[in-house]
Image 1 (cartoon, helix red, strand yellow):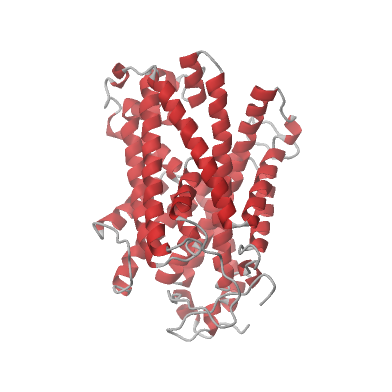
Image 2: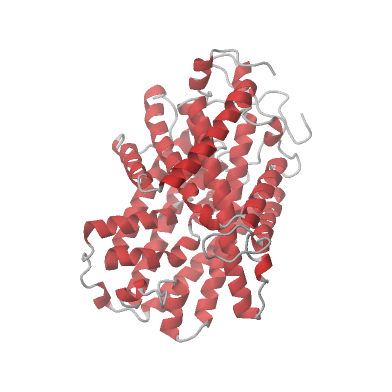
Amino acid sequence: MAGPSSSFGTQLLRRKPIARPRGPHDGPELGRTLSTFQLMMFGVGATVGTGIFFVLQEAVPDAGPAVVVAFLVAGLAAGLSAICYAELASAIPVSGSTYSYAYHSLGELVAMVIAACVLLEYGVSSAAVAVGWSGYFNELTDATLGVSLPQSLSYSPIPYEDSPTGLVNLPAVVLVLLCMVLLVRGASESARANAIMVVVKLAVLVLFAVIAFTAFEADRFGNFWGAGAAGVSAAAATIFFSFIGLDAVSTAGEEVKDPQRALPRAIMGALAVVIGIYVLVAFAGVGSQPVEDFSDPDQQSAGLSVILENITGSAIPGTVLAAGAVVSIFSVTLVTLYGQTRILFAMGRDGMLPQRFSRVSPRTLTPTFTTVVVAVVVALVAGFVPSDYLWDTVSIGTLGAFIVVALGVMVLRRSQPGLERPFRVPFFPVTPLLTIVVCVYVLSGLPAITWIIFGCWLAVVLAFYLLWGRRHAVLNDVAPGTAPAAAGTEDGR
C-alpha cells in the first residue's frame, strides 16, 4: 500500500466519513443477529460484576446511610456518559465504540489516542476480572465440593506485597479460553449465554435484598447526612467504577437489528436496570445491619455473603451468593472480550492494524482471528499478572473514552447538524459539559503511577501509528468526500 497522500498535519486531523457503502466485491460483514433485549443484557452483563458484591464495604464508611444517595450520584455520572453514547450510537451505528466515534468526529490522531484508552479498558479489565473469578471459583468449589486447586495453579508468579504466588493462575486462563470459544461460535450464541448469566446474577442480587429486608430496621438510617457532602462524594467516586461497562453496548453497532433505535434503547435500558438493582442492594444492605459493622475489619461484614450469613445463621445463602458472583464475573469477561475484538476489528478495517484483524468468517460471521489473538493475550496477562497491577489502568482508559464521547457529541452537533439522530442528548450542551467535568474530577484522584503507566502505553500506540498505521490507513486511498470500502473476509477476499 502506498504511503499517505496528504500532508502529515492534514492526516492527523482528517476524519473518517460516516457513510460507508458496500462495494460490489465486498465479502460478508458482521451478522445483524442481536435483539434490543440481548444488547441491553450486554450492557448489564459488562457492568454488574464483582463491584456490587463488595463495594459497600468501601463506600459505607465514607458516606454512612447516605451511601444510597452516593449510588444515585455515581449512577448520574455514568448516566451522563451513557446519554452521550446513546446519541453517537444512534447517529453512527458501527463497530468500534469510542474509537470509531472519535475517528468520525475528532480526527485520526484523537482516534488513536482513544484506541489506546479503550484497549486498556477492555483488554486489561478482561484479564483483571478473570483473576478475580479464579478466587471466587476456588472458594465456591471448596464450599460445595471440599476441593480447590493448589496454590501453584491459583496464583501468578509475579509477587504483589504479601499476596501468595504460584506458577500460573489456571482458572483465569480457562475462563478466558471458554469465553473465546463462545465468541468464535457467533455473536448471537454469546448474547444468549450472556443473557442467561445476567438473569441469574440479577436473581441472586434480588434474593439478597429479599433476605436482607427480613432484618431491616429503619433506625439504621438515622443521622442520614452525618458524613456530609464530602462523604457522599468520596463514596460516589468509589462506587463509580461499579458502573463501568455500559459503553460495551456501543461496540455492537453492526451486529444489532435496527441499530439506530436499538442502540440508544439498550444503553438507557441497561442504565435503568443497573441503577435500580444497585440502589435496591444498597438500601437493603444498610438497613440490615448497623452502619458500624461495615467498617469492622474483623468481620468484613460488607461482603454481601457475610451479611446473609449473619442474618440467617447459615452458610447456604452466602454460598448461593458466591455462585452468583462466579456467574457474574463470567459474563463480565465475556462481554469485555467481545468489546475488545470489535474495536480491533474496526481498527483493522480502517488500516490501523493489519487487515487480517478485520476479516470475518463466512460461516460464523465473526472476526475469528481477532478473537483468538485477543483471547491468547488476555489469557497470558490473566495467568501471570496479579489483578492489583491492572485495575487503575482500566479506570483511566474508561474515563478518557467518556470524555471523548462527550466532546464528539458537541463537535458533530456543530460540524454535521443535519446528521440523522434518532436519539438526541437532552439539555445540550449542558449534559456533555457536565460529563466532561465529572470525568476530569474522577481522573484527578488517580495515583501518579497510573498516569506513568498510561503515558508509556500511549507512547507505544502512537509510535505504532506513526511508523506503520498512518502509512496503511484506508483513508490514504480515498478521495475527499467519499467513504472507504469494507475490509476483506476470512478467506482473503
